[in-house]
Image (tube, rainbow, N blue to C red; front, side, top):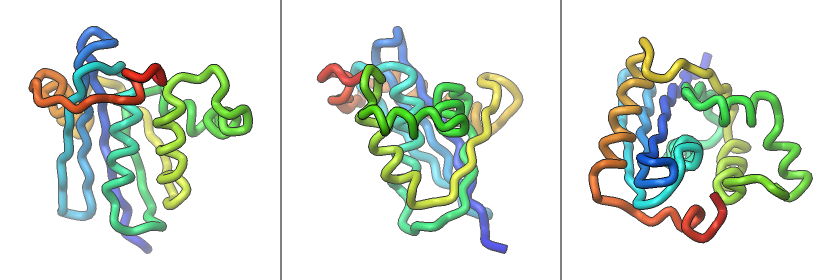
Length: 154
């Protein structure tokens, strides 16, 4: 049986839109890596989705068996209910965050991924830690530019 990669993600935006950030935990066996980054102007949904994209982009191997835990019903429903695949067929017409969804799909196709929704700010230590990472990044002042949002994609 192949080892499974566990990923926890969360996103945050102060003001929505406002300064935002993401937090990620990657867990492979006993190895744990945390990632986070802040952005000067963005939305919560963009940070939730960017967390997943960055987590997947950080992987060095393809074909991994992955479980992603997120408190974003936006992401879970879009993927698990197949909505995003319908959006591809319509060229994402009228959909926000098309830039990030396209990046997500490029990475998604490289692995076997299952999403699990978790209640935010509840009893899930991985999600709670990602929330801390995301909010610290949003509050840090060490921000990148979310060009997709600032150019009208979000």
